[in-house]
Image (cartoon, rainbow, N blue to C red):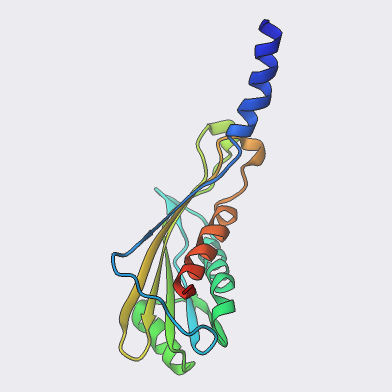
Length: 176
């Protein structure tokens, strides 16, 4: 009897801890950007993420690439900014590119640890704001919170957990 429970435990526990958790919180107002594929956008590169005093170098570039990849299907042209910019600088860059929208990701939290050794899961929290370039008015903003799994074998890195929820967020803006 004891062996049976041990087998069940060994089969069930790894399966329950292998999924990443994702949460998308959108601002109260629901704005859908339509029609898709008729507008242009500029994606700015956020400041690298951090967890306390630890800075995760290149996390800003990785985040910008994930956001650009998620939003690219919905624009006829999407330009990715090559360096970190303030919002005013990003708006100026977007206007110089004649982009209709500025897509501004901002890393609120980034944690990439060895979960197997520490028992702490990887985490990334990112806001993605959509700003109308000509007026500078924010038309949509959402916060994506992604956490890795507790099981170190299936862990990964924060950028791995961001791809799916950011893609879902982009899709929600263009769905009818």
